[in-house]
Length: 134
Image (cartoon, rainbow, N blue to C red; front, side, top):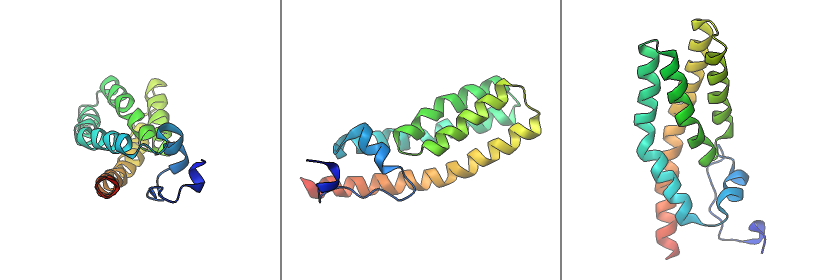
């Protein structure tokens, strides 16, 4: 049966790439919930490490912390945010001027604020969906 024919599909937030999520996890909503739970659980600390590295002007630390958080966005259906991380990593590696790095970092942080909201909302919805399915 194709995913489109299944009337019990979880409808993800429109800001998420649901095709990407279904390609990764199929209809395994328990596993998707676990991925979102792990991402939600670690997100604040990972984002704090990004901010801390920037505040110290530690470009190596910033690059490492951005690299660490980057896969999360792919796992939760935000490939554009994953690309933002990649672009920032490349700017740091190319030793771009601090102003350029700062501008890209601000874009990332703004997108991360929205991501935190999405994560929390989708995790709650997935929990409710999975409870109702059992």
